[in-house]
Image (cartoon, rainbow over all chains, first blue to last red; front, side, top):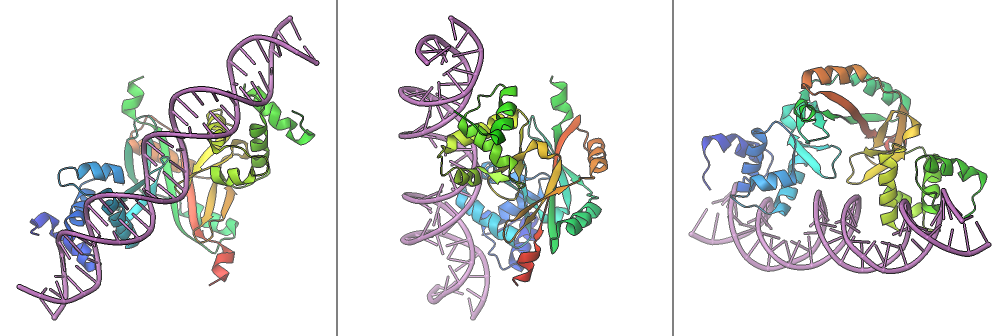
Length: 144
Length: 144
DNA sequence: AAATACTTGCAAGTAAGTTGCATTTGTGTT
DNA sequence: AACACAAATGCAACTTACTTGCAAGTATTT
């Protein structure tokens, strides 16, 4: 298959990681590159409607990309998993409980909490944390 | 039905909230009172094996109790939801990625982060947050 | 251009949670 | 203590999110 310049970077990322540059995967990375908020597999599936990709393929690709550390899995209050580019850097989310809108928030500032909890918990190490905020966005507040 | 002293408190909690004190519900609250870590519906279902309760009943009861604010829903890295007594107070969890052990950690200390994010996000209000830590517990670390 | 290992799509399966409806059970009232 | 009635339960069936197996297709290496 032939690709335009824009997807070239995606192809490189894949091949650097010993993954074949299939249309599904290149398109997948392109979608993430153009989106600032976490996406569920269902979200992605809808975006693929024109070219048509099986959901199973998406699940399998999310899995490989997460294992390689290219994509990160995020859990919110939902039952389904969300995904975002790991290269977007460590950050957290603010989620509107009414409309579901998700806002990325850079910055973190809880390292000292993490260290405190590591000591108090008696765990050997803490490798990861998730911090999500839930509230009401400005536009939902207006509607009431 | 007749109850011993221990469950009396559970019955009161239910009746104060206009819920009938059924055996399923009283037993449910008793289980939570004697457990310090979040439980999934499947966990609870197993604990009910002797007296036998339908899973649907558990789901429905979790729902009412969560809506009344008696029980709190917690989401970890899993697909399923976990539940804990809301009266245990605001706290967070440290989860072992290897064995799944969950440790309650009292204290929080992220109010100022919450305030900062509220301002930066442009949201109208932040009502809730979840903060979970993942790592390796001491006993899993020893095993390697 | 062929060989081959990696990917994909389809079908079917599992786990977690939900819905509808007939039956049972707490609870306030007699 | 028994009655009436709303509330709660159990069963069956369904949905959603995700997984597995396998045959067929495709990207890459040579």
